[in-house]
Image (cartoon, rainbow, N blue to C red; front, side, top):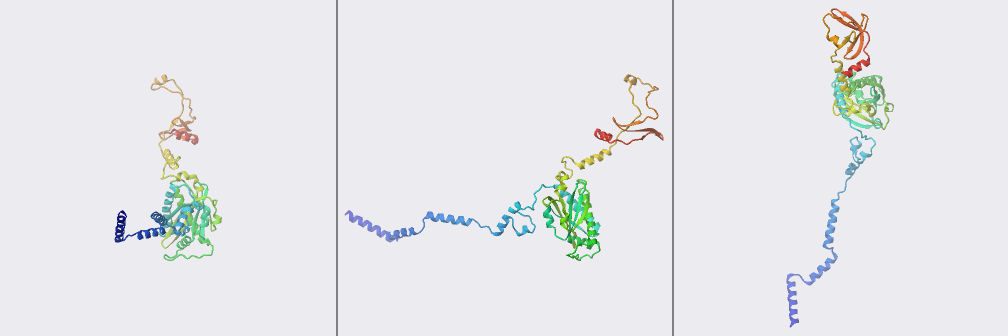
Length: 381
């Protein structure tokens, strides 16, 4: 009976599974099929790995060039970046000189006025860039033909370089010799510059150097004197090739004509006035200030001063001086030929002869005031 009941229960369970569509065969098939396919954990790991691979974006060639600093734009003279900015020897990292921007901005304004008077034409001068670079690299980058003017800064005891490109040379010659407006200046390549062209460019360089001296005047007195004119950069070497220099690029436009000129000052030339150039504004106190020294000296020389003419000095008891009465006589050792002393306070300046001019007593100075006396007066004031 027990066996029969068990068989009946198994049969009832089998019928129930067949009715529901799930049999032992299905379970066996699922198990056998599962042996050939990855498990759930392995499938999850594989999907994570695929997602990780998809998240790693591959850089294209432009991004690689930008990272390394090698691109066409940078080759054409733009600012370099990336690794190349660190290893490129042409780039010079040097301290910033804020006052140079003020000086060269003043130079642009002065040149605009001077060149209008020089050419009798509408001239516009603009400042393109102020940058640092090595002197040797600059000489190699000069587009030829060009005229290079070597000038000397007398007070700074060093040299500078002014480069005038061919477009500006032919434009200046055309303007000064009466060329028509609206026509492009004729440019003849493959020949040296004529004497007339060199003379006219020399006059242009002298005007620019004169304006440069006036631009530096509020800061310090510097006189720029033209030394020579060169057409070969090898003969215009004023510094070592590895020395750093400041390059100022100027653009000169005369309506439909014009060109560029570049002013180069080695850092060795600017070294004597480096502290002044480090100022953030004009007149900033930075150690010794020559501008205020000159202003103070001017005011001191114009200040009123009280002078005394001393004929003679003697000593007398205080009681006797207190008892002086009208009509008493004081005997001094001075004679008519004795020299009177000119005094400023207690400082002896000079001596002279006492006389009379009209109704006034006068003194004629017979020797100049010594430098030591001047210095003592300035210190006393």
